[in-house]
Length: 144
Image (cartoon, rainbow, N blue to C red; front, side, top):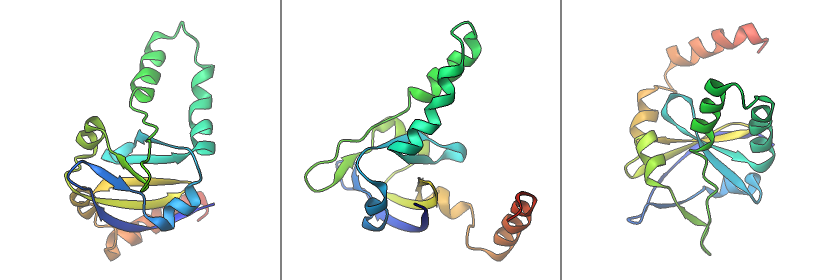
């Protein structure tokens, strides 16, 4: 399963949104929303979430600094409850972290989805030639 492409939606007045159908079909049943790097939110299907949290179990309770990092990360996790129309409320803390007001961009990124505010995503200049060329060059070191 691979997520790819983008889709823009608008949250309703109650801060509810629906995952776009092209992504929802691949997502499966349970999924989780966690803070992502760079100011986005990340949606992980259940299998990917289990891989994500598995390394945390190896951190000993005696490593207080690492445990604090685990706490900071896992405290942000949300498991949305969808209504009968497939909508869920994006919590205030998640909206604040991702600077989301109304317009939301879903981005397929391999095994996960990202949620961006429309403004933050636009600032990344994803579709411009020089940023695309730079991305290709950077990924070359990984054999891509």
